[in-house]
Length: 149
Image (cartoon, rainbow, N blue to C red; front, side):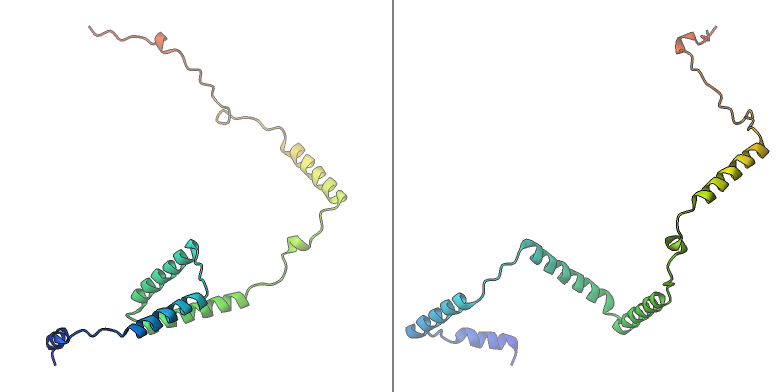
């Protein structure tokens, strides 16, 4: 049977009226069901989050559909890489965390070494390149005017 024939046959059938007592029973049952149903309060954030997840799911499905086994294998390899990397991390504490602050004797010795190095090197002479050349701008009115002949 063609779909067009089915539609034509359906249109030819007369509509029957629902008995009145059925209507009352249906409305009462719907009212009871509505009252017994727990009230769902969806906040704006929850519905937005659901829409975002739905959109993300649709986009990922579209992207991954051509070769889902290949993508699943790639995901498994990445998970394996992260697991191996995490298990091979150096779990020993850093030496700086263990070491105590330097003693006062060590600090005094370091300062003496710095003084001795400064004496050996001598005073620092500034070279011409190190000196900053001061530039004093002159007023523009004192410029020489070029007169065209």
